[in-house]
Amino acid sequence: MPKPTRPQSSTSRPKPAAKSARPSSRPAPRPGSSPYQGRAGQARRDQAAPEQWSEQRSEAAPAKPARKSAFSAYSYGSRPNSKPRPVDPEFENSAAPAKPRASKTGPAKSSAPRFSPAGPTSSRSSTGPSSSSRPNTARPSSARSSSSSPDQRPRPTQARTTQGRPAQSRPAQARPRPTAAPVPAREPATPLPKLPVPFAVVSRRASDSLRRGHLWVYSSEIEQIETGPGDPPALVPVVDTRGLLLGTALYSPISQISLRLVSRDHLDHEQWLSQLATRLRTAISRRKPLLTEATNACRLVFSEADDLPGLIVDKYADIVILQLLAKGLDSAEVRTLCTKILREELLSEGGQLTIWERPDPRIRELEGLSAPVTTPLFSTNPDAPTSSTTFLLNGFSFQFDANSGQKTGAFLDQRENYAAAAAWARIKGATGKALDVCTYQGGFALHLAQVCEHVTGLDASRSSLEVAEKNLEANRSRIPSEIDWLEADAFELLRAWAEPKSGSEADRSWDVIVLDPPAFAKSKRAVEGALRGYKELNLRALRMLRPGGLLITCSCSHHISLQELEAAVADAAVDAHRRVTLLERRGAAQDHPVLFNLPETEYLKCLICQVD
Image (cartoon, rainbow, N blue to C red; front, side, top):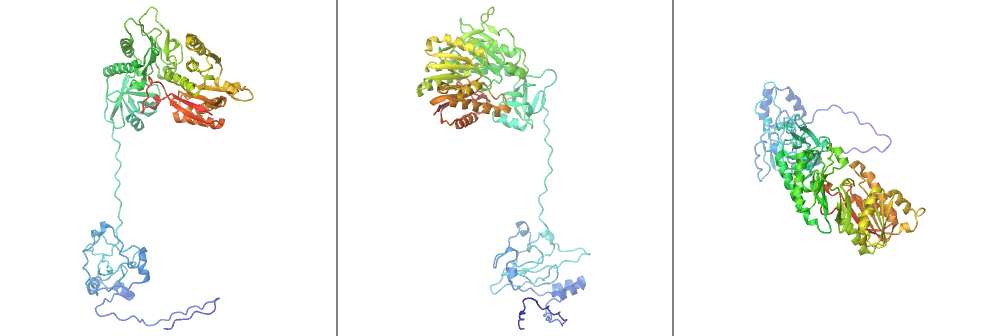
């Protein structure tokens, strides 16, 4: 038939002529073929009875491989001459029996009838599209039932021909979608086993913290606590939400730190007193080597660092200061036991010893502690107990009064930093003028006066400066230089001295400046403001140092980390346009040990820097 030509006009196209009815040119069915093939056979099949349809089905001729077309080669993302798409192993294992192998002379013919759900059609290649939108994959064996219900006509199947493989009859039922495994219902939380009262159940966060070595549990981390009738107990077993024992802790009902772990095991009251005595003796024995002829004062017990939470003991020559800083320790038994051990360990034959209890007023209010007694817990001279003495630090004499003073007296934790400041000033040749900011009782000032020509001590407390003057008079024989004491606010005075308009040139030519302020951050909420304060204080000091001078800056707040302090000094150096070199990082003295798992014990930071 000649190919029709395209019309010449591009503006209009002739409409195709209507198709006239003409006799069908479809050839008659071949002998042995089914009369139900093709579209006409579809109608005849629908009108035929199920019995006749079943008989014709058994007489169907074997299928021939269909001619492949370009469409069938690229259906479903396949490529020409590609292998069939893999099927799900779950359905592959339950598929029909294995197909016979093809002979060498050609593909084997299948005797299975070729029917599809939509009627008899010609067989197609395995790479071509099936009658549905899904690839023709194997069905589970449960879907191939050999019998059907009387009121449901069995659905015909479509022959599946594979290249080089015979066609195989497949059921035409819809493939069941694989369903996800049912999600088991969430079991209710295991009820907490019945525990003996008292007990405390802590949150998962607190449990993890205790298992990592920390010793504190805050009140917000307690999920349940049972103390029984009467007054709250001193000791409480601590368990997690599953009822597993985490240890035994001192209990403080009104404190933010409600629990302080004293043991990883369960302890009763008698066992706790026994361990308290053992740990107290151990802590004292570790400090005795630090007591020499040049230093007869140190911290004997440092709370959690010595496995005695809430207990601090300081020694100043023949006076011992006891602090009970936890409600669980506020008892007559604990006081009596501590006094007995201190007397046995520290009182030498013919010596003098007086033990005072002096709790921190702020902590006493937070913990709800009882008021301290006004008489000493022990004294070798009960008629006239000693409340003031002179003690030695690095060979320098310092005054101490048990009835007054910041913290428990002098800053024993800075003892080694006092000597390091004087040593670095000698090494770097910074022997001119030195300024000790927040000098308190003159610790840094007295040590720097050994190597510097002139030292100025600055503090806002007049009573502290009066004690510093007494310390100066007691050490005149060892101090050749002059020391001036100045009462003023550190921020205001340094701001005035650092400004060129108000300060003189002499105010901006210091060789050594020491910054040892009190704790700026009493809580985490105060950290941001504290860092601004540290930066401003260091900025003023950097502007007042001569090139090559020393900056010794300290922080005694455990909420301020060493990295944060260094960042504050670095920012101040940028604003002051000074080059700052870190010479040494220091902390508290040896009698203030640090626990890695309790960062609060590393509260004191000291940086020794050279400024250019």
